[in-house]
Length: 162
Picture 1 (spheres, rainbow, N blue to C red):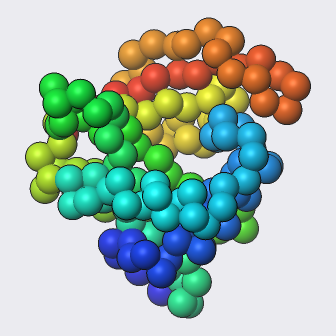
Picture 2 (cartoon, one colour):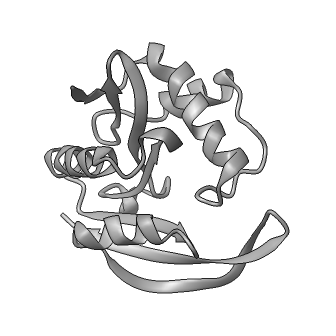
């Protein structure tokens, strides 16, 4: 059975492994080098009830995670968050991303987040579909802003008001 819950510091190893899988195998993130657990602990510390991290747990294994991170440190952006969502490859397209998205948006609304931003690399059709299913609207494209796996890539910007 799938359980969605708030992440705790001891989840950081699993969160790091899932993120590193995405770094190495996908263009879902523009990070190009694996993160260390210490780097991810620092990232974790930058989250709080206003900017939550949640995990999906199946049979006592963390199989995915999502976060609402600060969009910008400027005070005027305090009710805006950037959404991140990652699911282990073997667990994708099984409804886990939908569960994480649904819970993350509920947490954001409770935390008084008003605008949620998502940056999605071209070609990530499953991610685009998921975001549209939850009411995100494409508001623009940053042309040729990233290079990964020797390919120049566009990034689509999606936004949802809670």
